[in-house]
Image (tube, rainbow, N blue to C red; front, side):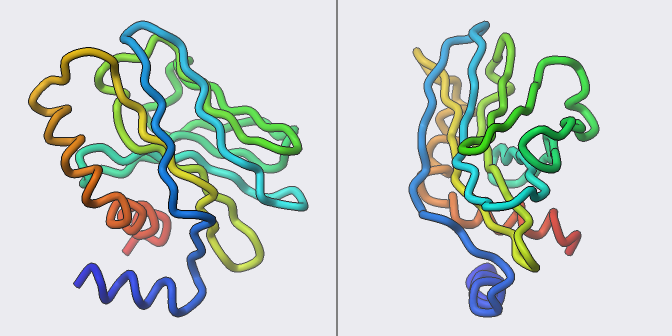
Length: 159
């Protein structure tokens, strides 16, 4: 079923993924971290950050329009821990005092014309010994990151 959905979305041209490489950022608990994705738009557009954890839960984090727009934060992310910003070349998501619950796969997406373009994916990992849940996440991530993109897309279209 997943392969059918993937095929339909990509063959229809609704979704385009700019590169298939996933970058990994490794941090320690309590640190601040800034995730970055390339701003692939040549004109002001709507940009969003998403997070997938355990390959099953997709969360909208924040969105903004244009490089000088005001970021708005989705439910559960208005606590001041997150800050979204942008310039002409990059879009940033800063997180303060990260904890193990912040581990996951983060995506930056752009609405361009009638397409959603995922610029890149960043996996946030923690240094040191991983918990059992984190180890399971690590194993699933290595095998299933494309299915995680589909989860985000299904969230966007509310299938």
